Length: 295
Image (tube, rainbow, N blue to C red):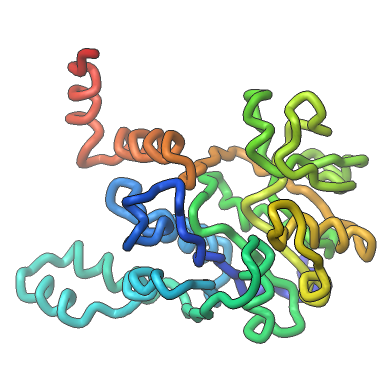
């Protein structure tokens, strides 16, 4: 059944942060380009977007993020060398990366905070709803997280935030936690507010509402008039709290989901190991190596 609401055709990936938690590695290398075995983190995010049916991707970058643009570009010299060497598999992969989507790059300008990159995409997005996914974390799920969110949007026509249950109580302080009042269906809840990095004892639930958003264009004037929040930064959750005064906002608890917080050193290393253990060329040797380790 065709949805009566405007189609989601664009996605924003904020990727202008400095990645200070990974210094000195991120001094000259974008944190979004940190490898998960043989692919950078941001490629997993792009693949999720594309596999959800969106091919117009706006990446918000900074002066030190040129390698992101290069990664999704056409590497003529590399292609020629692979072709001459008869490396058809590698050649097909580098061409696939460049052809995945229509990439638009916008330099971030404005105050520090995670609402600023969203506002920077205003002129490109125009007057239509859009998706936002962070460039240094991702969720592996079937079907893709963003596809599940789009299906909720197409049914209800409301802004949607992805939700993931946090198992360890002490970890609630790391995320924006949803306070919700009504279950609209099995995995869809009506949001009341987002408690940003709450005291675990005072958290309104264990449902983290973060990582991916479907937002209306009405969020842009809200951000433009938003005052600085905690740590003197411009926070997207604060803008969403203002959006709640205008419209219903939903949280979609993602089914069959595994969350990977690759902006955290320990979680990043766990992600690399987990993906390597599932890699067909590495899993056997890596399992053997890990079993032989002695401490």
